[in-house]
Length: 137
Image (cartoon, rainbow, N blue to C red; front, side):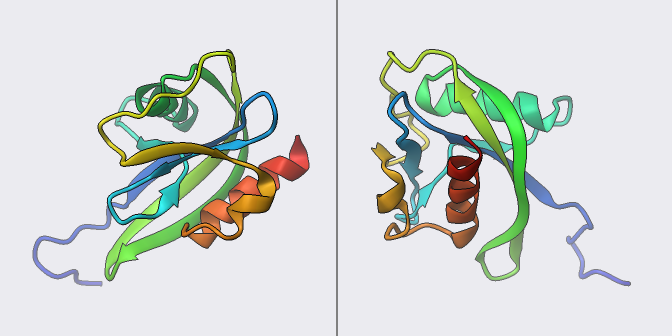
C-alpha cells in the first residue's frame, strides 16, 4: 500500500478515563468543538496507557486517580480523515473530597448523573464507556 506524501501508518492514540465522584456522577470536560468528553489525552512514548490516563486526569482535573479495567477501544474521526484510536479505562478517584478544577485545555468541567449522559453532545463511544463503567461498579 502506498500512502500519500506526508502520511504515515502511525495512529494517534488517546487514553481516556471514566471517573465518578463519591455520589456516582461522571466527570466530563467540554472541548473546543463544544462536545463533552472524558478526561485523558495523547499516549506519550515512554508510558503505559494506565500511566497516561492517571497523568492526564491529574493534569486536566486536579484529581488523583488510579487506572482500573480497560473498558473499550474504538476509532474516532473528529474531522474527515483524522482518525484517533481511543482507549478507555474505568478509573477510581483517590480523593473525591477535592472538587475537580478546570484546566486551560477545556472550556468547561461538570459532573453528570447517569441519566443525563445520553442527552449530551458527546461521541457515542464515550457514552458507551460511561455505561460500561456504571454497569461494572
